[in-house]
Image: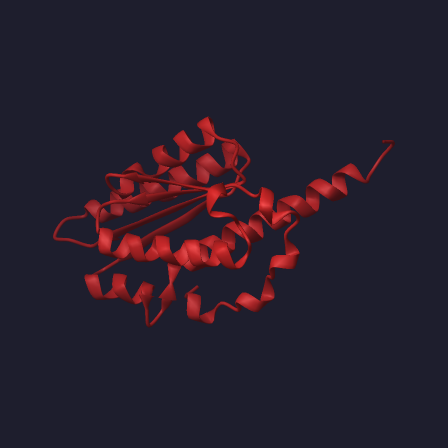
Length: 172
């Protein structure tokens, strides 16, 4: 879904417990850096709106989008994080390289999220040209980085909700 269609009011800072304790990792591809920096800025703006401290956000840069999954794995294995946001951009070229990269990253991020039990958010633009990338990185279709940060926070909120309800059931 495009960010412009997303109602940010549906999820509010009050929906998170202890945002001051939430720790987020962001992995950003250096390839197409003019696009990925805009995605990163969008993510940071949303996290700030939800009172996530800059000190609780760890950002690493990886060479390209293919490396997003490994960057996320490195963060998850070396830090106690509540979620990881992966931001990159693959623009269709003359070959089918984009299909292979996009599929590998999508599968890798899904598997990493499932195996770690932590939200790992897919913020990979898979576009046909530079203009489409610009439109989705702060242009006419909003900012996918903002959407990814909001998704991460919503998933953390869901996790918090079920963690709390689990502890309230039974004999303890």
